[in-house]
Length: 383
Image (cartoon, rainbow, N blue to C red; front, side):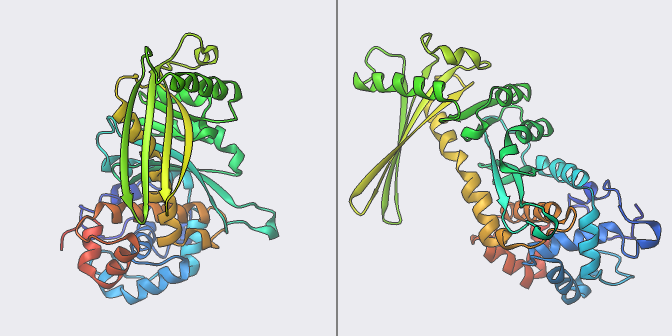
């Protein structure tokens, strides 16, 4: 890939990864260096652009500023250029560059929750070419507020095969990896252990025998207040937005009588979680069951991990839909939908890491678009 005489400061830590990505264009089709296309796209998405036309418009409006960080001799790429490049850019290479950079944002994963969950890019379907909407599996470090990686699948049902692939790409030593019931598979548990992490897996009807054994065991224990049983518990309460919530967990070593538990690699604990929610005087309850390789000796840690798993919904999926309008995106040509999704995650990670402004992600995008100095802070470059 040819390089421009770039003056982008070294603090822009994504640059090293960008320089490793192969330019998919022919020599004759490289009017704009690939690194320019990538950097401009990242900056524009941070600043509120949601498609190729908006990226070009932003770059034209900010050309004078861009000339302070990039060699803009050949001007601003057109929206057709952005669309064409991201449609043919290798999503695997872009993914690896992203994951190496994201890993640098979370140096130590010891005891931190990495939630694995899927999301459908709802408007990425292409009926004319008989292509269904893209489904992706995300890895989200809840405590750090960092997306660690993403893998595309053709269908939601393919999550089971995609999850081990994503796990093998991630550095997970010391992490607590959480998955919902679809990820409750022995192969996935084994892969997590191979990555030197612990698993915490929700159990539902896709593992009917295991789910029934757990429910019956905890029902019997609850009936006698767990007297004489080796069970630890933890509870937390919260109030806000007109509702009260109480979350509790009970954790125990794997009982000898639960035969189906013996089939799972290095399973060390079983967990019952119950949440009570009171809204306008009406209380509802919800019970969930889990299996884990964590020892049954730290109930508060497990309670936090159970709660943190849902951070992937609020911190990642909800934010992508509300602040980045991901569900409305019609980008779909070639690899463009997957690569645009990665641009959003790069932007989200950068905006999350900037702690100066105490506002939401949508507000931060607006400020980055308005103020060059703030954009530099988001890019990890001090003005």
